Image 1 (cartoon, rainbow, N blue to C red):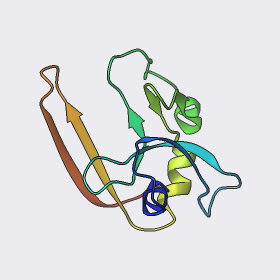
Image 2 (cartoon, rainbow, N blue to C red):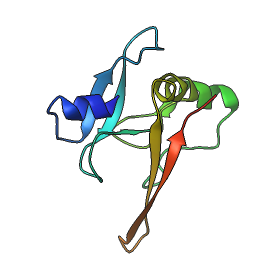
Image 3 (tube, rainbow, N blue to C red):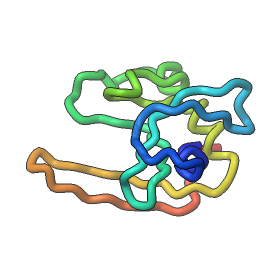
Image 4 (cartoon, rainbow, N blue to C red):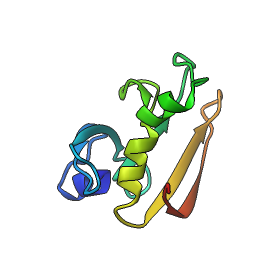
Amino acid sequence: DCDDVYKAGHATSGVYTIQPDAAGASFRVYCEMEAGVGGWTVLQKRFDGSVDFANDWETYKNGFGALFGEFWLGNDKIYQISNEKVYILRIDLENWSSETVYAEYDRFYIE
C-alpha cells in the first residue's frame, strides 16, 4: 500500500504500483504523501465533475476514471488493500473557497 511506498522513502504524491497480498497481480494507485503523516492510498478523487459517478455496481466494482484526474479505485481493489491490515480512512473535503476539513475513521475495511 502507499504507507509501504512512503516508508520506502517516496515522499512525492503520485501514481505508484503496489502488490497487496490478497491481489493476484500488482496494480497502480494514487498515493497522497503530503496529507497528515503521509502514505495514504487514495480510493476516490473528485474535484471538477469531469467524471460521471452515476454508475452501476459492476463499474464501481472494477473502478473508473483516471488516477491523475477524477476516479474511483474500484471495490475489488479496495477489498484487496483493506483486508491486509487495520487501516484508517481519511476523508478530505475542500469547498469552492479553498477551505479544507478532514475526518479520520479507525478500522476501515470492506467485507
